Image (cartoon, rainbow, N blue to C red; front, side, top):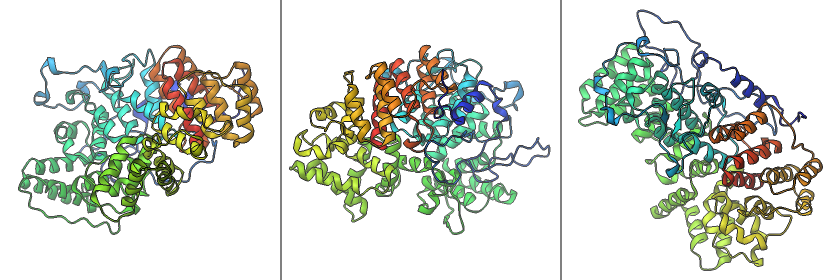
Length: 599
């Protein structure tokens, strides 16, 4: 076996090697979503052994990594608590009165299989992880640097993480669910993370699950979601955030006096201060008979945290746009999913979230429908009017002109792909005729961005051979028709080098080239389909064992780069090959076609 220089780059290889060592998860020093000090234990007469100081979980955006750059992504750990993370037994935890949390046996949910989604609702089979070791899977999830390059890979990963899965060996079911929810949060999937957290009974929560549950409530701007957890959570996870959660929940429960006393005590004791304490005080005052009027000023605040994001969103406080630039893009996706803010204020975030797979095409169209109904004169209202023209104008040429305006009006490549998703259903209304062949590339890319394969396939007789539309259809078609060497070679001659490599890799992985043709085209395009490294061994072995969930997770590991240009063709080949092997042919086809659309 030959070791290819592209696919053997150190990032993925070291990640797999590290996963194989099964490091003690409690030894990772996680970073926090909360303001400084919130994730430290409250002052105690008996000090605990100190951990390394907290650092922000979501650091400011840095420049995109150069194309093909290799390196081990920084671990994305779960926020710390004063207790070691792990599978603590009841005897090792402080005594808690659990009687109020107990459910009748008939209503309790087992930790042997956890997740809200079954195959009937789009989830994977319960045994999708096979015999994979739980600590190995947890390490892969913990180290996965999300969000990843592909919209369709992100959708597949969300589906896997939400599935009701057998808890693998060597991990606690609640801890494993918490790790899955934590990855969903880093992907921008705040609502999905909350569904997963809520699929575990509170009396089964571990310290790790309490930590992630707080993050999920903040990411969905729902501090009231902490109230069923606050009493037990404040004991099992002595982070200072729970101290203020107790005050907020007292206020929301209609006890303004108790809430006020707790807020004042927190201020005196230095639990929190400034805007962090004021936001908690504002939430506490939103309950019945709340008496404290609180004004939030952002002057002097140079950093947004999830505590500030969640409480501001819950209380209707506008966050300055500049502060969103202090966090990674996931938080913009959380913002897009919030139900409260004005639709126009969420539009740009929603387009970016759609490009990542967090927001669907139909949800994006609905959002712009709300903006159109508002009838204001904002730029977003202009976009909504153009979208209405793209759907409703009587003349196909006029509809196409409106779509071109939407595509060209996007700010950046990611937003442009979001606009393709926005127009996906409108694109199905353009006749597949020679008169419109000049726009076939964009129309086909738009339809496939939302998985509309059948209407896209109508363009197979119109799209110019050797063009991008032809290439996307060759990859996305539901018919497993083989592609001729000459047709693929024509595209290789005409297309940009990396795009040509991705077509050949995708066709080979989908089985649409003969083995000899695939290797010959790969050599001509200067990459090696036979390259091997620990990642290829791991994903191929998982596919042979029919471990669908493991294949999806490992495929995502291979795509942990912010841009498609960072995905080597050898990785796309194995991703398509192994997704097909475990029955996820549709995802394999859409991922391969997405590569052509976004490069």
